[in-house]
Length: 473
Image (cartoon, rainbow, N blue to C red; front, side, top):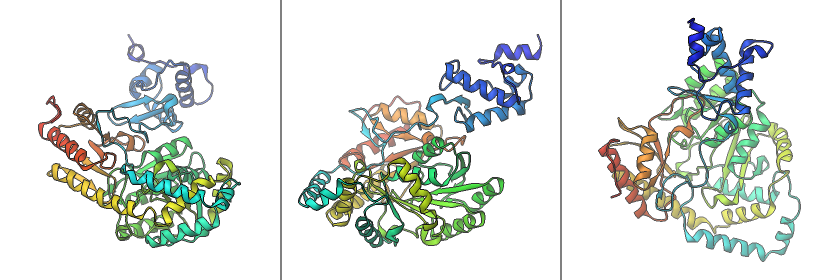
């Protein structure tokens, strides 16, 4: 039996590339797409190893490698170190992550970065709505089509509040959006063309990964250190290819908790100017003014966008955010906004601005900042001796697992003892290998006691190792 025949018998999938004209590598890509569409290749199925398929088809390994890369760029497959190349199919644009809890009713949910539940949220929101109800002129205005960027008075009030938080901004540069995720999508859709490259930390927010996939953008991972994205790594990536936009979370990265110094921010700006990169700063994970560094748009106003929302401060269900846009780019962004939704809902912006800027929400925000710090102290106390990274006012911690734990295995073991957490996979950009680490959010439980119980259970798992059949303590 020939080498080709033996390879053919070992392949779980054998395409018919002769039915296509043109370059062989594109014919193979078309066969992947056809097989996914008709169900011959199912979601999650592994494609044959490149050398094996090359032998089976009688082509070079380089041809198969090029085909797999093109199929990945089109969102048909996903390559992971150690896992091979697997079919994504119709799930290509859906990250393995959710903004809604997947915890069972009897599990302590530490999986989501959400505001801490508190009765005052409902009470304050009720008071805000009552205020608006007592202002007929405001209600009348909310029922009309809104100014595309948002009501000028609302943008002025928000700019004053941001200034009180150490973020000086011209109100005319603000655009209201339907939450931070919408701001992220709007900026990339308006300013980056399909096929162009965007960059971020190699571990980053899954919502940003989803946007890049949805818009058919090439997503370039940049290596990091304790201060986040490394300027030298960004510079090398720019020398290899044209990068249009860089996504950053400088106050603390989600999920790793890395924080950028002002010197690091200036170094990144220098690289961005040299290579003409736009910068989009995600500040949805809000921290107090005393903890903030310089916003990127203060350092490079001509190329920096800034995202803020009330989702972490007040309530995610409001879906109210804001995007700071350089004046030279405002036209493109507004064209994109008009095509998507024309403008945000007037009643939502009325409620969000009133709640945030009137002082009604101040006690709740202050309490939450203090409570988050205490919850991190509880977690740290029980997980002392382990590699835990967090911001004292951030909603999550990043736990690097000791050997021989593996992330998915630890998540499953935690679920078995009644604790829901997330492994590193949803945060990985492209084919980057997932580190053996998990994200632990301290905000979903209603009280500290649940944090303490969950921390004790996780500490017990870490101490006993993966072979132990753990039970709740």
